Image (cartoon, rainbow, N blue to C red; front, side, top):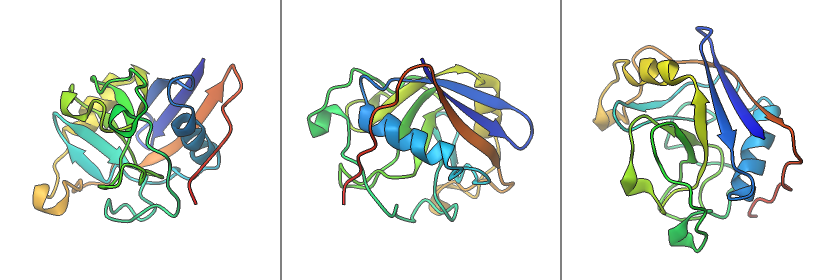
Length: 173
């Protein structure tokens, strides 16, 4: 099994099972970023209760583009992984280009069927739903400002542990 563990500054944790057989490029990218410490100290920079919490922006601004991109592993881009966007799904954020995901990811707070086949889901939460609900309930500056939390929701660390080999890392130029 491949697991991602997100530890928050408040001591809470969220643990996810990652599905490398269905989304090898996405899992390899996330594992590389997590284990390099890339996500350590970042905020959940977008919080939309009932929808998603999002992180992974190097400057905590969801408008910042990634320095690299991935081929999007989802049905509308020709890859049907079978992974959906149920409560607790972890998935890659992207722009309009289907191959624009890079560092930003989100966790689904409540089922989001409209994302199915359109975004690269790559795992599901095993534990930590109370942390997800707590983060999703924080006050934000509203949709006109991308729902940035008024009080930072800091990630202490993200690490990926694997009992099996991780797929090779392949990013787009």
